[in-house]
Image (cartoon, rainbow, N blue to C red; front, top):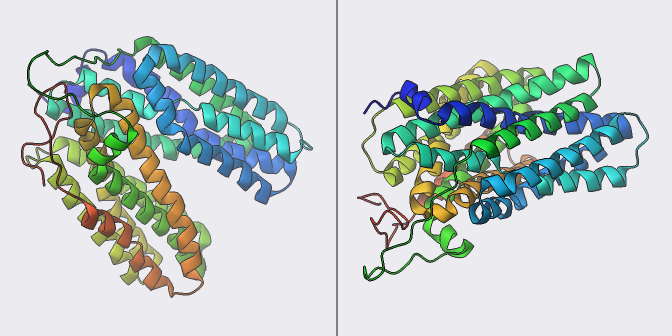
Length: 409
């Protein structure tokens, strides 16, 4: 069977899944910057705008697994439309509230919190759909790689689109666009989504059913979730430190080139991973990629100039999408069919939790340590994740239970 990217695009159902998923997920690329700029415009305070945006992001991340769990329990067709309508309604209310100056800070904070609580888990739903459509493991790996690269590109395109709307019209237009994108895309995704099959093990086969519940899922998926958290922490620290590095070299705006190099490297690495026949089991691949990410981040401490730091960023980027893709794949393997959406959401949550924690800690470390030392320390979260990985035990090859690679490490 051909497992090229063309084969992914030709997979039955892919032609309907991909446009719907990308359309809805573009909203998550446009809304953060739009919300920040629109709130600052109406309140006259970037500090308050930062708190509003932080409330939106924090609630969205914290409740992400819970919303994904609803999709697992009730199916995407029943759960996604109400979430989409509620989320779009909250965004429309924010659009109206930020259209003109003078809206009080409190209502904006409440509306942003409501929007974060209702944001549909489109990424995990999309990956769960690929697990159904791409039954061949190699085809699924390429599908996940393509999906991760596409998602990263959306997070580059979205802010550019939001900035363009703010520059040519008003920032609230970006929130309005976000509402239209997520409502249209999510409803389209719900219409084409296939319910996740939840097979029942044959009676009398002597096998115990898998333990369900969040604690058991987190225990099984400890390695990929740790890797995602380590990657999020290392990359967040690097991004903050790169901005400081650029400012200390007298060219603060040039940090954009460093971020662009990171994004370009990530897209390249993701596509290369998907096109490479790497026969090692997923835990081994993830360990190697996590180590490579840590090594690349450590090199930033030696960068003497901004071009050199951009080169390190490009090298680091080569490992980012492959690490996240492999974390998603391994988590999917270790989850039962009834947990797939929630499992993917936990990878997102782990990455974002690591990112938020590292941003706060890095800011504190900068006050006490030299910049090169801080850049070197950015490599420690993925190293810690690598050191903390443990052997998966008690796995079954039964297709209806959590699956482990044939040679777990």
